[in-house]
Image 1: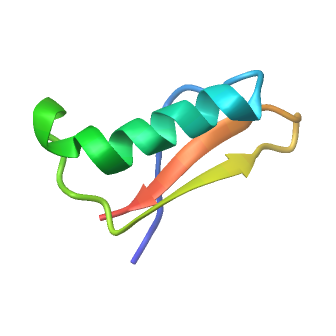
Image 2: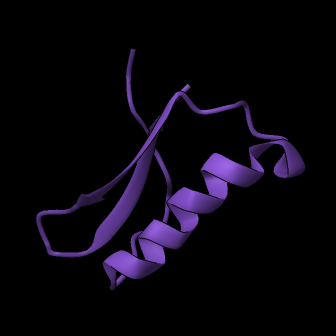
Length: 54
């Protein structure tokens, strides 16, 4: 399986964590498929992003 990366990067880990939690809990509201795993990662430039497995 491959990771799917969310398009936007965030300045703080808190912002990325909020998106990750929202994806875990509210996936059915927004029409996403249920992610198996959601993870916050740090890019090489120091910004934070979200990636997930379907």
